[in-house]
Image (cartoon, rainbow, N blue to C red; front, side, top):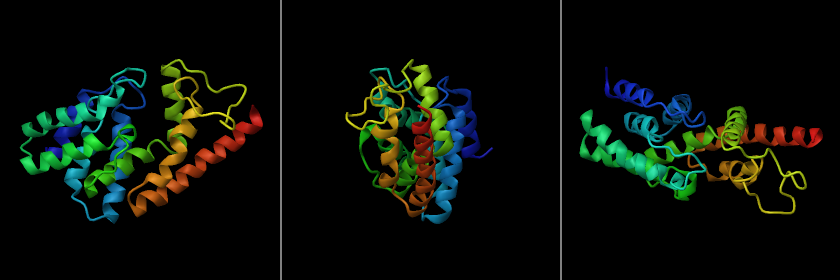
Length: 206
């Protein structure tokens, strides 16, 4: 097996119980990243390695350590990559991409590998799968679906720690404008339309 296959096996063996950040999520991000790599001048091996390890440490959103997930994943990735004979330079590029990929870090990656990881990961928060994930997390965290008085945040700031639907307004609808690559932006636009169409339909139903 090559290094990528070995990493897949290792990550799958550590599969998270969090349905929004498990091995299925990782492999969807992997698929997104492969597509973007074809359009960008990036080292596919480094990008896909970063993808496979980007959530190797993932705390639940309700956990106070949640914002440390990307930093701890970067640290853990270095230990794993050393086992598979990645060079020190490769390890640094991969771990830096992982460290900076998270939305909560509010950082734009400086390398093309990091930019592709960010885009590929953010695409999985959009579209039909994004809707499924946000309500899966909301159910796991025992949040209410929406604020009955103002479901669509017309007259208040979104609070997605209480209401799941608020996550659309706090994060998901912002992602399209934060994409780094042209191909990422094109796909994000399509998937954001799915979110907007969902909200239009939801307004009719509630």
